[in-house]
Length: 315
Image (cartoon, rainbow, N blue to C red; front, side, top):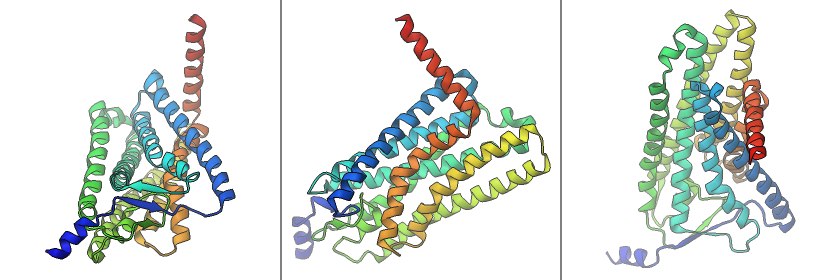
């Protein structure tokens, strides 16, 4: 009882984030680089969201899911990247206890949502290519909304199952996190009790959801590619271009996540690089990949820009 009272009295109120490097020159370069990436990420994903919900030609299941994916990426970038950028120019790279666990909660929530959305997009492409005659019947508006709601529910479930295991642990001494943000396994290791079981739960939860979604996506896209290969035509060449964009996003998103949680703490330098890639670089992939490789999206953006210029001229 006395030991528990001592732990409660010495509760950690903030954590120190070590960041990527101690070199001020490198920190300045990273500050400039991450600032540019962040602005490009938010503006690019916002442009996709506005285009999808403004241009009538894009009122299709695929672009509805893409718009939601861009919205998730925009939020994902906005709650971690600004803090990372600010810490690059601060001597004391600290984050409050509440802020730390808010980061953890949102990271796993949005990560889970994005995984399920990518699976939903793979299902959408499967129906469109393998069952084209029944596409609009199967992928109706209710189904699309249900897929998005399900992704948020599963993301909330994924995050909610892990946070209580760690947030209620006693933190009474060490408060240094060797990362650019509050990563759940690293924070759990700072508790003043043995957390082996908690670490297993974290790795099992995050690792298995990442791996299972990735396997489902591999199977789905394999079936789609076999169908495309057996029906070569002009329409199928468009399908191949769309699939290439989807598969690229899937590999770049799931690769770092699976590596971090299936082989946790194998190499701190590698883990830091993957953490940067997963939280800062990945959210910008959608506006780059889905616009540069998608003629329909580029045409819609030109239409949106034309409408914007016309409205300014009228005023």
